[in-house]
Image 1: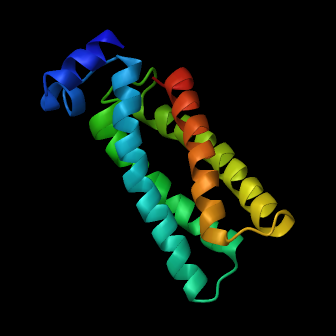
Image 2 (image 1 turned 120 degrees about the vertical axis):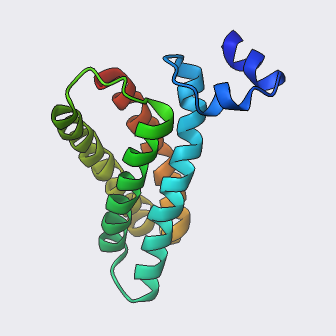
Image 3 (image 1 turned 60 degrees about the vertical axis):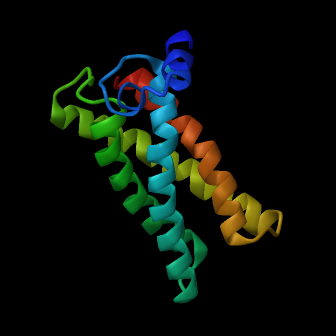
Amino acid sequence: MKEFFRLLFHCKCKELLITPTDNTVIQFFRAVFVGGAAFVTDAGVMWLLLLAGLHYLAGGTLGFILGVTVNYVLSSLFVFRENSRYNKRREIVVYLIVSLIGLGITLALLWLFVDVLGQHEMVSKCVAAMIAFIWNFSSRKVLLY
């Protein structure tokens, strides 16, 4: 935590955002930005598919798949940068398993918020994405990096 605040207060952007690190706080900070880009992809695709008349769970699934792809690429470049415990093939398999669980969490929450609680699809997507983000970051950090 101390290193994170030192970099933040001294405006050390390269070290804070790009330089490889094993510091979990800095990785989480980076993951928020990466997750934001993935969320824009995910929610944007879902929103477009909803406008096209697709069911919200189908749109949520397709958006999630594209969002996870963006997340993997950006996380590999900025968050965890070659810190995997496994070779690339095994890393991708574990990443996909974690992501499928994240998809299950997202879809279950979407169903709960939309069908049970009567909330708007996109509001529900925002809440579900925040909860799934915690799962995705934590499990990837523990299981992969």
